Figure 1 (cartoon, one colour):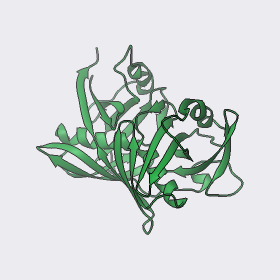
Figure 2 (figure 1 turned 180 degrees about the vertical axis):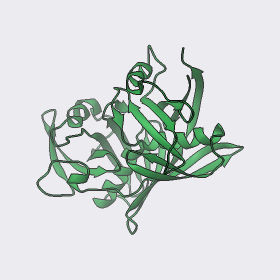
Figure 3 (figure 1 turned 120 degrees about the vertical axis):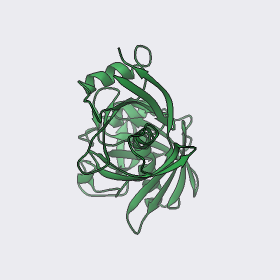
Figure 4 (figure 1 turned 60 degrees about the vertical axis):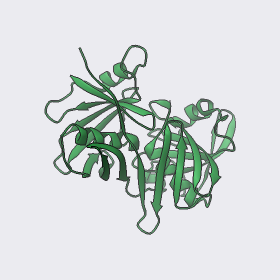
Amino acid sequence: MKFTKMHGCGNDYIYFDCTKEPLENPAELAVRLSDRHFGVGGDGIILIKPSQKADFYMEMYNADGSQGKMCGNGIRCVAKLAYDTGLTNKTHLTVDTLSGVKTLELTVENGKVTWVTVDMGRPSLVPEEIPLLAEKQALRYPICADGKTYEMTAVSVGNPHAVIRVEDVESFPVEQAGAPIEVHPMFPEKVNVEFVQVIDRSQVSMRVWERGSGETWACGTGACATAVACYKNGWTDAEVTVHLWGGDLKIRYDADADKVFMTGPAETVFTGELE
């Protein structure tokens, strides 16, 4: 089985073209291949499959074998792989996910996709839609972890996120706080945790603890959740650049349409074949 290693801002996955033949035991394979010492190395695996209601279907598995609903960095790479390998010649794509159908606009240079803009749909702060166990909806909720109490804004962008503002994101103990928040009883399906430092009205720095993968170099849905949370809290404008360990993502929240748009790079690292 051939694979392609790709990344979006350092958020790296192992991709399989399953448009013609299926992949057996993907959850088990995700655990084995994601190992950075004994496998290919990555934050998980992503399968590109046929779809009856979109151009393609994206199926993703985290490094621990759990299935994810949506990955913002991953879906940009799906678009690049599909276009660059000739699965499609469209620059306007639809990709179905467990979080619904997403629309993508591809920027092509010299026959290869370089940037992708994704309509990530409607973000939600409604507890039942996140899901979050809370008596009533609020902009910020207290949450305890590692003996400390943090204020978080809970947002769903197809998957659950807890956005926490910090003073200095570089020195913040992400694993120490992120690991217990990921499995906090308030989040019945676990949660991705974003730690955010606001630089100015148009820039923030973010580190992320992803459910099922630990700290990663980037998280597209997390960047979207962060932009929405920052705007709703009055910390930034509706359009922000999110600085991540692996690079920058440009996020725009259209408050009138109640939609969030993400623009970022997609890169191929190498191709290979499994024995």
